[in-house]
Image (tube, rainbow, N blue to C red; front, side):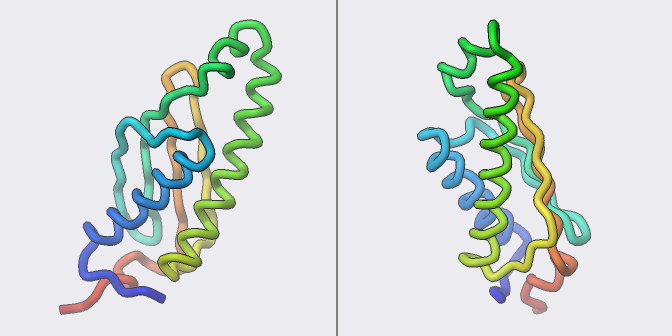
Length: 123
């Protein structure tokens, strides 16, 4: 388990992983993000760039693109959990994520096994 010097350092490391996963899946990072920490949770609200092919298909085949969105989110959540645990040594209990293709906004909640303060160096 890694110990961080500050909440800010932990937030930076989480968002680096979050963004790298988006780059791996979509070939592009996120446009903007807001990350908050409280208790045993981290929330990430982000603006994404919709995959152009899915944006076009949304108009005529939303049921298909909704299925693709769900599968991509499942892969994203799995990868986020694995990388937070493997790269940062943070035990993750749960990752929840939702995405709205119209606004291109997503919300992610990461629930850790312990309070976030446990992972911060006490000075």
